[in-house]
Length: 185
Ligand code: HEM
Image (cartoon, rainbow, N blue to C red; front, side):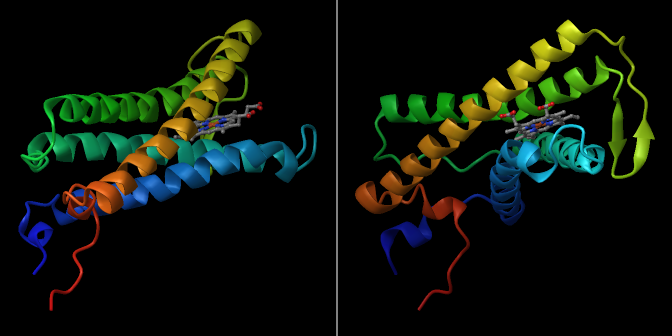
């Protein structure tokens, strides 16, 4: 048995939420960037494609909230004692920044949508906008939505790089505790 096999791990639900949200989030960023190519502005299919993007975004927001609630009731395992306090602080703030982006990004899109005449069709269920139609506010929150999407994309790259650094260079068990449990020999 390798020494890291015995280290405390995230529970199964936390690991599934991590993997599922990670894959969906990367897919949703790519989907957002491809919206104009998939359905150019003014084309007949535009509304359906945009509403699918909005619906997946709301689903992701719900999943992130569920994950935060799960994490609150099931705290993560302690960091390995080999990690320096500065590295622990950097990881803690990096994860807080990731959660802040994962919440703020869909919220900005949802606010923009509600400050326009469009509203939302949530997987086909029409929800009229609750706010006034103010084009300047729509454009502002939309621009924020785009900026946050790029910030999240960059942060995900950094997050994966740090995970690999722990798994391949440091080999301190930090990566293993979030990965599926391989059968032991
Ligand atoms: C985590 C979830 C989400 C991610 C990762 C995401 C990502 C993106 C990205 C990358 C774009 C393209 C930006 C660009 O033009 O370069 C985009 C556009 C857009 N998003 Fe999202 N989004 C999310 C959730 C939402 C939600 C919840 C809504 C609304 C309820 C929404 C509404 C929109 C709209 C309307 C556009 C198109 C804006 C336009 O060009 O007219 N998004 N999104």
